[in-house]
Length: 317
Image (tube, rainbow, N blue to C red; front, side):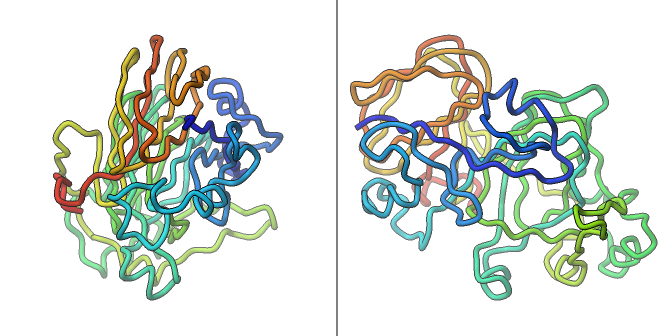
């Protein structure tokens, strides 16, 4: 079977950029700003669409409903829904300081799963930074007071960034993507975000954007982001594992898991199932489990994303 090239769903959030996703990552969209491209998504808020093969024109959820569980692979058998979502994010302005809940809390309060995620920095302007957990342990009371008096960012760990940096953000970690960067985000299949601080910005309706302070106080880990090791992987949890592959390379997509390949740098080609397709930054492909051998040629870099056997997950998340 072929590798399915995916057409992303796009978002025009107010902090987004105006050209980089189009010009540097080939995202076709008339939205302005163009903040996010959901390059691999089964989420109802923005499913991606298959561009080639016998299912061309159908959404990824529609394809998977027809193809059945075998297309996801044996490692996905325990999931009630598709496990992950992959985005390209162009932050011309800083995103809000925010937190995502755990599965337990989100299922109880929101009716969907929580959100552990990871970021791979693809581009960063000089001086770009992000917030990643607290600089030190703080009390719940101190956290709440800092939100009220506007001093929250003084408590947060400010991390300078450069292309190639990787950050893993377990649910409960307070964070914010800063201005002037493009990142690839691999996350759980969830759209639950609790905003804590938004720099006093107004939304499209001219009113301050909603904050979710009480829920954030209930779910936030009030300390530094945990240090984690993922062995040979960029990041890993039960919902996704991400590797960086540099072309040329080849591999096999077996029956254990589907494989997503997202090109982040360079040019090349992908051959799978008797079909060869061009690869350029922003190209994202879905290989159903059992697709067999594939070959990537050319000087390109790709994120390879799959679901690992839970027994082999080095982080235990």
